[in-house]
Image 1 (cartoon, rainbow, N blue to C red):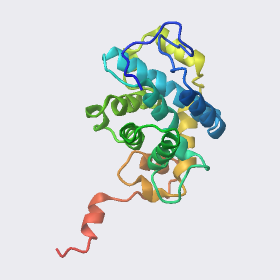
Image 2: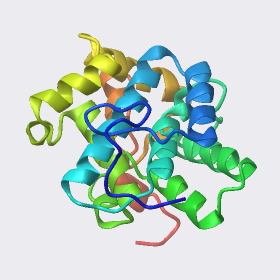
Image 3: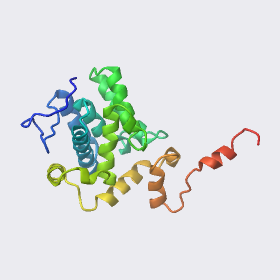
Image 4: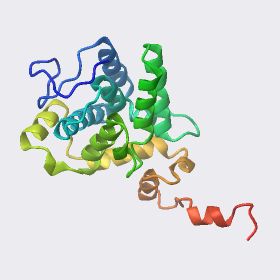
Length: 223
């Protein structure tokens, strides 16, 4: 894989001066995720790649676009019934799915570890931005698409181009919250210590999130 800082202006799948590398790996990823995820998540994941790559260009970071694309496209597959485990965080399910896929395509373990970590940490604020560019950029892309973080740092033309290629529906905010809930409500214990506990609390008034202080006080240690 080749690290890049710029993209050819006429490359396949070019959107807002960013392209998806035209490789067998990325084409297979696109087909797999399109067949696995509902359109809401597929288009969300696609937009995440473009926001992430645009952020990388703006920050002048060197990153491997294939690895970033793999992270972006697999980051939410853990919400789907096909890839959801009974007891792991959905982020870990997505990371494990990406790892298995990349291993089956002969990707070096170091690169696989980078993608695994990027997906596993994409809902853990405050840490990814200090790590490998692929890890930092995946979280930045997710934060832009879901939370609107750094919205004003993208030009109108960039936002319009990405949304034209992968529509951002008018009810996206409520629909993505529902998609998160649908993917995790069967294993509420996995939301301890992460933002998805807020999703369960929003959708299920009877949900009582675990409390870190309560866990400490209930531990086996005396005192």
